[in-house]
Length: 288
Image (cartoon, rainbow, N blue to C red; front, top):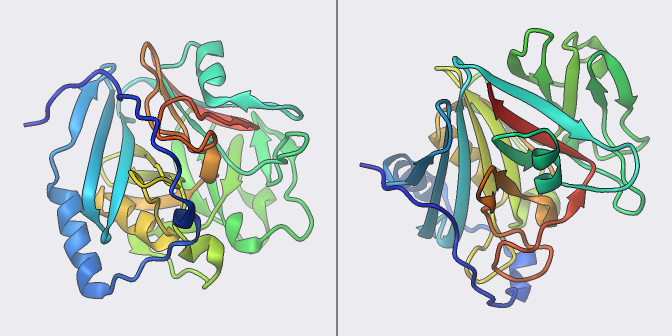
């Protein structure tokens, strides 16, 4: 049975310097064991609305590492409005976006210009293209799209051969890498962005129409972060049939109404709830 909790304690331990470059050394057998571990773990769980659950677990031995994982689980069969708040310049904290729209919960969105703000990948809101992917942007970091159609239905897309303009949903936020598609883990390119452990934000959809928004903390000796393959394995173990990576690092943030920031954002190099970074777009979830 899941236990209830109301927030996260503050601990001011300093960042673990080598965590930024640490790579996973797990083999296939160890990954299978990790999937079983994730599937069987007892998550600390709080019901924050009729359709939205907040879950947390601190793993002492997941992927041979220490992992701090926060999940927002949403029953899309109920009345929950999913939306994207954004700025075309400047910076918007995940917590500010949630408060601005009276959301129940929020997570950070996709990649942005860290010097002046605004998305660096394709983003369409209510039928209007806000931004195209910048020229020469790393292709595998914008090969997935989080879509909301005019009726509010959610889907995750693989980048079409004709480009993102071919996706007809009224709202589309792109990111990547794509983690899971048609229930299968997606093969990833061998690049440091994928193979090094970092804080990660990911979002996925299950067969029974639940949305799983996951934030993995990192860059600290109490939270080592995950590789892309590890976060994909996590999302698959959580039941996702499609899933995609969002912006990570110091951007990775979960905010909940009346609780505030509940994960341990790494932008202040401490393991506390205060290291939130301003971003360009935020995915919000509001119980209606």
